[in-house]
Amino acid sequence: MKNQPTTVKLRTQKPKGLLVAIGGNEDKKHELQILSTVLSLAKIKTKKIEIITSASNYPKEASKAYYKAFTRDPDHRVGIMHITTREQASDVRLLERITAADIVFFTGGDQLRITSVLGGSVIEKEIIRKYKEEYCVIAGSSAGASVMSKTMIVGGDSSEALRKGSMGVSTGMGLIDHVVIDTHFVERGRFSRLMEIVSMNPNNTGIGLGEDAGIIVEDGCILRAIGSGITVIIDGEDQKYTNVAHIASEEAIAIENLKIHTIVHGYGYNLSNKKYLKPEDLMKMDLGEGEE
Image 1 (cartoon, rainbow, N blue to C red):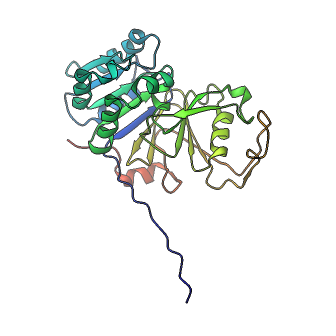
Image 2: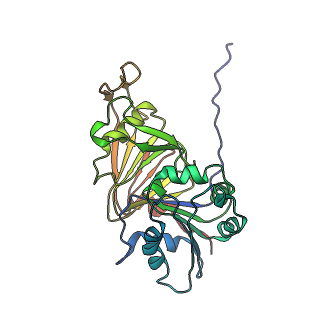
Image 3: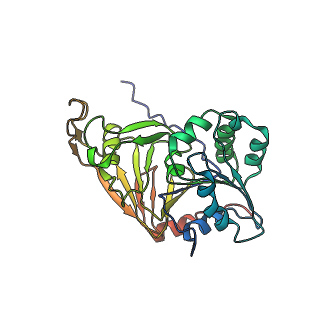
């Protein structure tokens, strides 16, 4: 009797924390729909929040609106970290503040400023540890959302996308794997550039966050849409064909059978089994309850 093939199942430990990735230009002055949700996920009355402005060239301006939004409740303790050097990224006092934080929030700007300053630092390692081992909230807007994935888009004009070599990619913080997150997605017409990235490695799911749109990520794989905007999911698992490996640089890319979904507030998506989640599905999952 011939040996039967065995199926190996890889078990990965679910992170205990939550991610909140925001597409940019979220409401910071009025209803605060997304930012209020970020606060509500930390299930304690007095929340310790640290705002990291490393992505921005204008850190004071970048942090001002978030500080005002998060301190509407005077009980919250909000700190701002203008980390711009590798030396600062190893500061023990800043590290202790990260350890004590209930919410760590990254502002927008340029995601390469985050990875080049924080990559491999004790602060980055502590953020990753907290996310994996503790109930906490790691949130970010625009560049602060793009940096969450292991594969990170760092450049490429939408008008030039779907031509081989037009997109720049690098390594992000790796809080979530097998996805690529793009921001300002609908408003800046970034469909083609995310399609290109997914076509080159269909194991990655593309997540395109529109403005004033966000997702909560629970258990490392369950997405729940929040905000008034649109989130686009590009799934390459059933991709049948692409010519990307057989064409020269700058030639046009052909792709067969990408799946595209959109989710809006109240809807979701399971990255693990590629299942679209309607409001009734999410209600059964009891998402975002956290700990008291």
